[in-house]
Image (cartoon, rainbow, N blue to C red; front, side):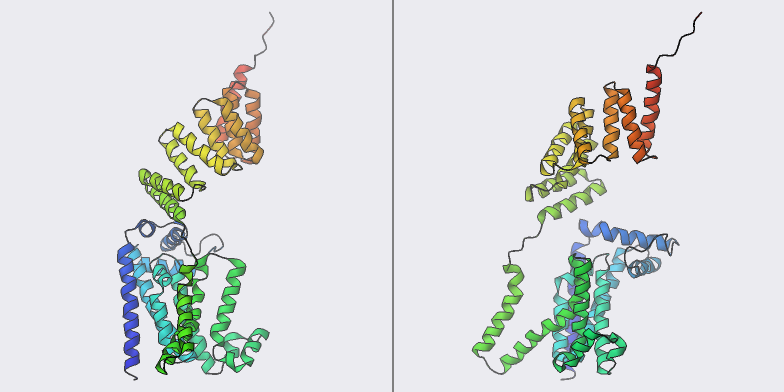
Length: 419
């Protein structure tokens, strides 16, 4: 029996490793993995600055700093290699699964440890984050080791040392029924409470999952043990309940956001300069959700960049229908109408933008340009002064100021001399 248990754990770790490596090989050339965006891009850039010698930076940390420092260490050793990072995260993820098994054995027994490790090995979210330049993979591994350490500390009777004295801890530890699993319960409550208060993004809740898996193992193990004792209607009902819980997320009718997927792909392709693919994905995002505002704005930007101003106008008009209170899209419409020579429409859109946001510097600037083109130099100068009050160092407004002052000087007649 003692020889069989390590073998089962080794099989679990082997399956976990194969799933993660297989996932990595399958997605490594996909846009979301080959091209870093958002937080992944920022972590990578931060690590790059550390490698170049900027160890402390010049501002407050806006993200936990451990992950970028570890990234920098990998880059120093292996070069700027995402594959090296992913391999390290996969290995640390496997170590976390082992730690979760140890925590389960200490809190319950070896069967519960193996069940929790098996769930962690197969959990798709863990597999996903092990191949992302994000701190979640590291967090999950650290939490698993923390649970192991807490469970070990509990076995040594040092609850005060690893939790501290407190009313909540005292209430939990008073009852023997809770005392066995107190480390996991307290961690779950503390983490979930903090994420509900401070952040609701799903990946910020991922680190609590190892503790939840310890309890998810309970019905699986107990159901397996009950089957050995013989089949009864109660045990059948318990098995059906477990299957219902496993199927619940699929029965809820959850639909993933295809519009967000295609919009994000559009942004990535636009960043890479693959503009046709970017526009195709924006169109697919709009087909999935006709109210996707940015999937109208960005194709307008693409059309404007290739000087197809009529197409840009159509895209911006669609965006304005979706969000009529957007001052930004009204500025875009004003700019396009000005380029097309419709100064009356340009002024209407810019007036609308300023009605929505009187401090929109770009709207003030563009309206000054329109006024100058219409010959209203005094109005243009007034609008230019307002824009410079809001953005004194903005170069387009400074350039326009010089041009308007020259035109005003030419317009103003010089006093003649009497003979």
